[in-house]
Structures are given as structure tokens and as C-alpha cells.
Length: 112
Length: 114
Image 1 (cartoon, one colour):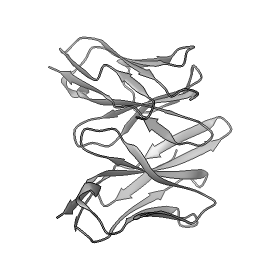
Image 2 (cartoon, each protein chain N blue to C red):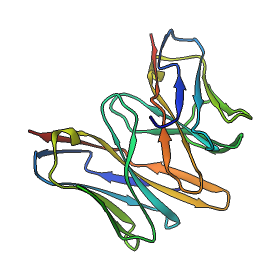
Image 3 (cartoon, chains in turn orange, purple):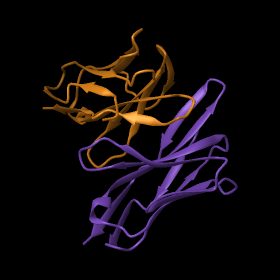
């Protein structure tokens, strides 16, 4: 158990819909990262937050947004969903000074 | 920004043989190099890491080497076992000022044949 909690574990929805994925980082970790992993693909970096502020942005679509709340949990919002958005979405947290990432179990999104 | 290249993309070995995965990075400011193992359908998990002030680190059957001058680092697995079969990701971490970023390689699918 990494200490990072992601919900939901599985989500099936239809094209055009909107979903929210939730992440609770390890206790004490201020940084939260979101990654997308499609079938047979690597880890595509989406976005990073540090203590409530956006720190770095990767290949995140405009239809996607995220935020980190004062209690440090984070949400990734995916809207106007397309078939190609089907993927495993990982959240990770870290102690920024060390760089070591701890991944959650992931949220598997299926868009039909 | 940082770019991490990882080779090979797939690697198949016989049980008991050694496996080597290599990565190169572009940003000389990178100072931390972790390796993650991801089994099918599971989360990536850190298996070993190395910092820029160290040239080699070993943990049982796994070792990592770092050549800062050439900007490359490698994962070595000896006496491979079927349970070593997984996707392995290298990464390079840059920290300094307000810049903190972890960049992953594209991964290597390792298959250990019994």
C-alpha cells in the first residue's frame, strides 16, 4: 500500500460525458501528480500541483482540468469525453525534496 | 525541458540470464534517477533509485549505474526470474529553484521465459 488513495477504481461512461477522478496523497506529501496511461503506452504526464498551486503542466488536453484543495487532495476533471480518453489514470504524490513518487492504484476509465 | 530515452522497448531473456535496460537524459541539472516496475494492471512501484552523487547502487539482484558525464544510467537485473516480467520505467528528476519535474522514459517490457 503506497498510502495514495484514488477513487473510483473503475468508471464506465459514455462519450460526451464528464467525470471526476479523486486522489488523496500520502500524509505529509505536498505534491500531487496526474498521469495517463493508455493501453500499451507509457506514463503520460498531465499535470502537477504543489501545496494547492499548479507547478507543471504536461500533455493535458483543454477538456481536462485539475485542482488541489487546501486539504491537499486533488481532483482531475475530464469533460466532453471521447473514446480515446479511455485509459488508466494514475495519481502520485511525493516529498518534493527527494523526488520519489508514490503511485495510487489508478482509476480505470472506459468511455463507450 | 528534460528528455529521457529508454532502450530497448522490449526485452526477452531466459530465466537465470541477466537483463540490462539503458536510459539517457538531456538535462545536466537532473539529480535523481528512479526506476519503477509496473506489473500488468498494477501501479508503478519504485524498485531502486540513484542520486547524482553516486555512481552505482545495488540491492540484491538489482543494480543501477549512473554516468553523469555521458548522461546515461542503466538498470541491471541478474539471475532473472519469471516474476521479474513487467514493464520497467526509468525517470530523471530535476529540482532547483521553482522547477521540480520527473520525466519518464517510455518503458521496457521485460519477459523472462521459464
